[in-house]
Image 1: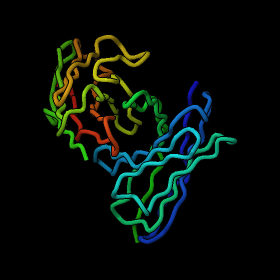
Image 2: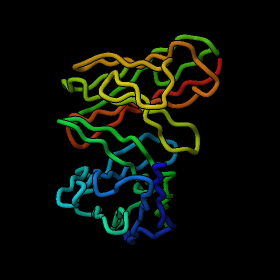
Image 3: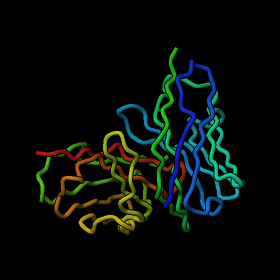
Image 4: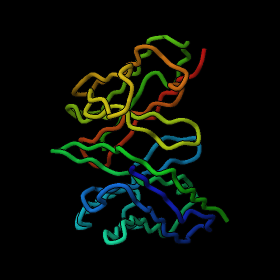
Length: 121
Length: 107
């Protein structure tokens, strides 16, 4: 069965950095786009970024472009999100999600359990 | 960016009730609209994609309709496990924005 497991969340000071990982299993990882989505405490969902199956194409939400970097290691079925220059408003649970892309549409059919990033001094 | 709204923001309903949640997009998104629900402390779960296609394994009491800028998620007969927060999400263009959510709780 499809499983996604995030790790790397931690308490970090403002201005700090963190790398999140998502280990995928139960499907052919290099056949799928992958996404990062976050949810601040008690708030809604915010899409962060996606990466194509090969890793060549990446998209970002404007508010995170330049500070966050998505990447993947298809040999080891791993997805990453590098978070730099963190701010208090980046405090959230970060989810990885598998993307099903077709024509111009897509959806997120499997999600990990999330990893908590807390930015505070 | 495409802005998504939902109504109501919350509703109270009883087991067996028919429930409808509305989602509106700030521009025409065709049928590139997905629905998820989320229980406290858990990850969201896909229910409906492409406005009206039922995700595999999701009970048939869930249905989706609409196109363009107005969409509806309907639960034909509310069950105990359906008490959750429901989100719509557009996949027409990045950034793939979500609605603010509709919390469904027990009356």
